[in-house]
Image 1 (tube, rainbow, N blue to C red):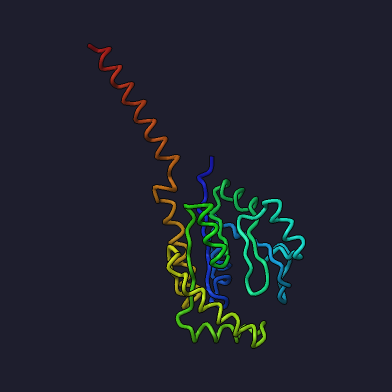
Image 2: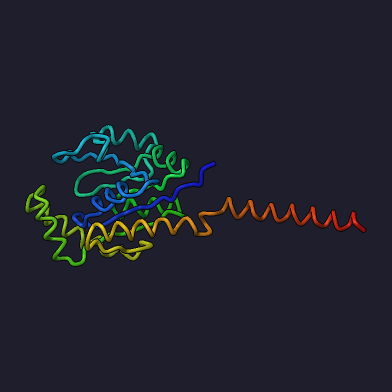
Length: 218
């Protein structure tokens, strides 16, 4: 039976580069599965349904909620986002380390449902750098950039709820730090419950056998 994977929730301000870091992580190391979220927002240039997101209408999204097919869901800048349950749980069972890229509301909901999940918040070195990245992306209007910066100020109030904070100064460095952090979770006691229980049982059996042999020799 495969060792169960680690569920890692990655959040960050829009424009912090969290998606780029996670893409680099999955391309550089084996054993990761990047969860694809469902969303009601329109695809950006170059995005494909089923790759970056499952693009759904609001009606389709509501049907997924009614069928309890989402681990979590939330509204962000006038659009709904959610995490499909079946994909996540099946990959974890296969031993894959599953990565969820979701915003703070959803991350905290996942933590409630999966207490052992690892919560990581990725941020840029400075607020000025965040603004520069949003503008440089060239995919949003000036009004949307203002909305995202305002939302970032709100999100900053919840950063303490995360287990770790990673600064994305360079994608390569941040990717390496994220990889080491996730792999270290495999050694936590809570991630080794089956191994601990097995060792306890084996020790009970071997001690019982040794006691019987000692009695028999006398």
